[in-house]
Image 1 (tube, one colour):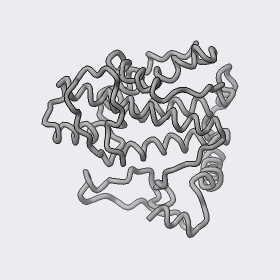
Image 2 (cartoon, rainbow, N blue to C red):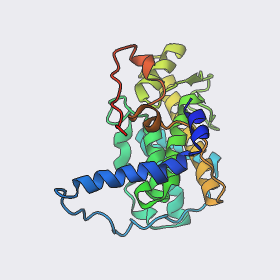
Image 3 (cartoon, helix red, strand yellow):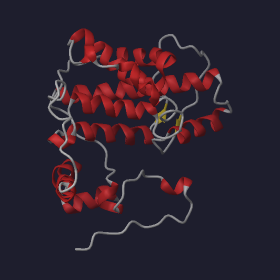
Length: 263
């Protein structure tokens, strides 16, 4: 439905981000400028984008992510699988980046079951390499949301490591959600395995590797100036609020409608 609306209006997600979204942000900041203190974060040594990027092998990256999951879990493993390679290929700013600090992404951020850490880690990677959309570098934002939609719609895990810790087949499930507790919960129901089982752990390691693989595919396309955003989920223009596509799966009723801006 959203994609059809965009086709009718002639606005791509990129145009939306550069146009309406940017204007809304500017308006909000202008409204707050009277009482917000001056920000001093911009202009640091690492805030010059894009960061140097050399194309990576998706399979090597996925293997690294799979192994790193068993050390630092999902989100940190995605970051590590990309940045440890770029430390060797490029050096700074990757050499100084504190990869292990992002172990908190595990379990849907500090074990709260919210966004799957692999999705969060992928968003961190692309927005650091390409830059944040507030400087006009919208591809990082778009790749991040592409990863999220791909995660929701794909039968995961896709990647099979060369030397898996679990030799038996790992079931694939479609989460229809970027959230850890939905994604893992659906898999546990299908596989009939508890959260602490070796099979569930290996499933999440493979999902993490699958995300890292696709992330590098998109980054390589961006490096070649061949990236074209593949998703079509833009809830702000359709519903007036940030959201994921499958709200009704968990919230059967009683969802308040977001107020619309009066024209």
